Image (cartoon, rainbow, N blue to C red):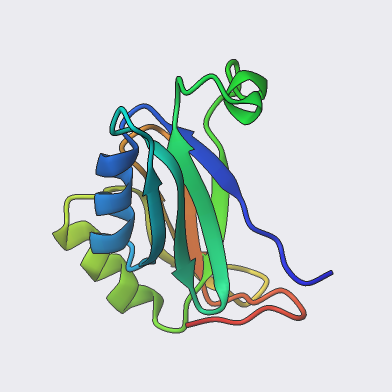
Length: 132
């Protein structure tokens, strides 16, 4: 396996891209827009991984399959949780759990994006993963 890449759909994908890059520090790799200005496909990267996203309502097979899906959750490994949290909070991200030391040795915080998806950031790196 060469990697896993979560894929999310947003009602306002452009606003999601802005929040995810500014507040959470993801890097814009690619954004492809449809003729109507919707985001057909975007890739945002972090530490060798990426999340793919697009606009809801495009009528694609993925859009149809995800039509009744609820919010998703994404975990991102970072090296400095407190600095990452400070950046997210300074950009107005909704913080659900401040930086907290976990029993299993990680330090994590949790935030909600503009459309209800949960983003957790922590020092735990699964085997084979990479932090920032």
